[in-house]
Length: 146
Ligand SMILES: Cc1cc2nc3c(=O)[nH]c(=O)nc-3n(C[C@H](O)[C@H](O)[C@H](O)COP(=O)(O)OP(=O)(O)OC[C@H]3O[C@@H](n4cnc5c(N)ncnc54)[C@H](O)[C@@H]3O)c2cc1C
Image (tube, rainbow, N blue to C red):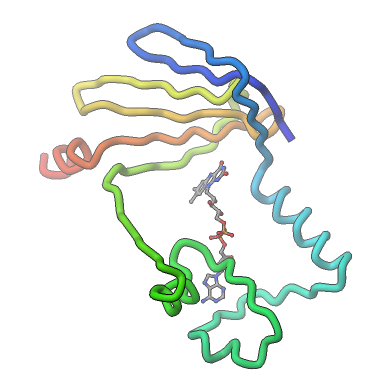
């Protein structure tokens, strides 16, 4: 894993360093490989390409651990029991990878003619970083509408 303790904020040409914010990162494929190996080591055999259409399909299970992500059918099915509330926010994101290894998690705020952007970037391996770009919906729609 890559680890560091500071985060950086780049705003209006200034870099502000905030110390003591511990952070660790790992490439997703590497993490998934470790988790799969760990599951097999304790006798769990993963099934892939096995879509569960509804909670009825799980009726025979001794134990269900609901880890089916943002669109979880289990959370939706038991929404009233769980007290689920869902709120959609409007910012738009695009994720990129780059071979530039950034020192630490950095939030770069940039104002352009197309609007305000915030890039979140950090390395997850010695030679690779995530580069995530965030923009508010108003600016995306302004671009689309010409
Ligand atoms: C592009 C991107 C980049 C991200 N980067 C980071 C990052 O750098 N660091 C970080 O901490 N987080 C990051 N996140 C967020 C992180 O990926 C999620 O918070 C995390 O994956 C959620 O884990 P989860 O196990 O709840 O759900 P998921 O990882 O979504 O796993 C849910 C699993 O359930 C399966 N599934 C769903 N429904 C069914 C069904 N009906 N039948 C069978 N299987 C089903 C799905 O196929 C999936 O494998 C990122 C997210 C995205 C989209």
